[in-house]
Amino acid sequence: MTTPSASHATGIAADWLGAVGLRPTRQRVALARLLVGDGQHRHVTAESLFARARAQGERVSLATVYNTLKAFCEAGLLQEITVDGSKSHFDTNTHDHPHFYWEDENRLTDAPAEQLEIARLPAAPEGAEIASVDVVIRLRRKRRA
Image: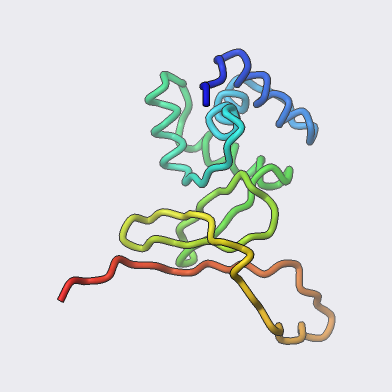
């Protein structure tokens, strides 16, 4: 597989933003290029995206990364997965699917959706409807005896 050129990756990023009507500011395009410029899905935290952006010479603050990720989520471009109520990961694959959370590494990966079976959900309380079901399966490395 070849790596897309910078201009091709920028085009993919701008198209991704344009598809939902987000204005393609320099910082949005730079972060979008890191998220989807190669056409692959990925899971990131704000901190990991910030570090990657800075390593590639992008001038962006951590606050801007947080704000941009929030805007991308609100536009439907990203799915936010919250772990432990405070650790947010962001997934470029917005289709419903389960995740593995690797506790020892603070890392999120996709779990095989075809192996997941949910037989029944509880009824939603009066006046409410189920919007989605998030499945995060926590993993840790086995300890050697």
